[in-house]
Image 1 (cartoon, rainbow, N blue to C red):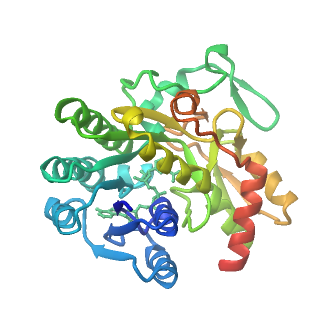
Image 2: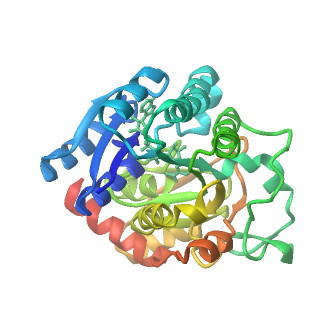
Length: 340
Ligand SMILES: NC(=O)c1ccc[n+]([C@@H]2O[C@H](COP(=O)([O-])OP(=O)(O)OC[C@H]3O[C@@H](n4cnc5c(N)ncnc54)[C@H](O)[C@@H]3O)[C@@H](O)[C@H]2O)c1
C-alpha cells in the first residue's frame, strides 16, 4: 500500500487520481486550497465514496503546508496536480500564476528533498512549454480542421521540440519553470521525478469553462442550452486523452519508476485521437445535443494544431490510450446527464 499525497486533489485530474488509487487500496491525502470552482463538489463525491479519504486544506505556495503532510503522513508518492490552469488568467494576474505554478512546484520539490521518505514525484506540466514554436510548423487547411503539413511531425510534437521561443505566455513560463526544476531535482539531488507534458485531458468531474477544459465546457454548455463562443475559426486541432486512460498511466509510471525516473513525456491522445472544435460540434450532434455557437477573434498564444507525439511513453512504459474521442465524448455525456 502506497501513501500518496495528491496536491490539487479536488481538481479534475487530482480527483480522478484519488478515486483510482483509493479504489486500489492505497492511502490518499489531498492537499487543496479550493481555488477551482467545483472543488467542493469533487470533495463531496470522494467523501461520500471513501471513508478513509484524508483532506488537508492547504496551499502549495506555503512550503510548510506541504512539509507537514510529508512528515506526519510518511508520504512516499506525490502526484503534483495543483495549479493555476488558465492561460487567460495568467495574463491578467501573472504574479499569482507564478506563485502557484513556479513557486508552488519548487516548494513541492524542496519539501520532498528535505523529507526523510524520498518520495516519488509526478508533475503535471503542459504542452504550452513549447510556446509559439508550434505555430511555426506549416499547416494545411482542410474542410473541418488544420493539420501539420510537415511529414516530420506526422506523429505529433516530440519531447525534444524547441522550448526557447520568444512567445511564451505567463502560464507557459510558470509551468516550464516547474518542469525544469522537476527534472533538475532528479539530476542534481537524485529525486525520483517524472514530468508529464499534457495536451488535452477530458472526462468525468471536469469543471470545464471558457478558459480551460474546452471539451467538457462545450458539452455542459450545450446540455444547458447555453451558447458556445469559438475563438478563431474552429478548425484548431487537439489530441485528446480520456481521463481513465490518463490515470492508468500514473499507475504504470509508478510501477516502472526505475525506468521512468528523470524522464519527461509528452502525453495526450496522440495522432490517432485528434479532434477539431468543429468536429466536436458534429460529434455532439451525433450524440443528441444541439449546440449553439458563434465565432470570436483568435486568442493570444492559441496553438492552431497541437498533437502530442506519444511514442516515447508508449515505448518506455507499454501504455497506450484506449478510448477514442467518439467513445470518450459519449461516456462524458452519459456521466454529465446523470450528474449535472
Ligand atoms: N486538464 C488538462 O487538460 C491539462 C492540460 C495540461 C496541463 N494540465 C495541468 O494539470 C494540472 C491539473 O489540471 P486540472 O485540469 O485537474 O485542473 P483543476 O483546476 O481542475 O485542478 C487544479 C486543482 O488545484 C487546486 N489548486 C490551485 N491552486 C492551488 C494552490 N495554490 N494550493 C493548493 N491547491 C491549489 C485547485 O483548487 C484545483 O482543485 C494543472 O497543474 C494543469 O496545469 C492540465
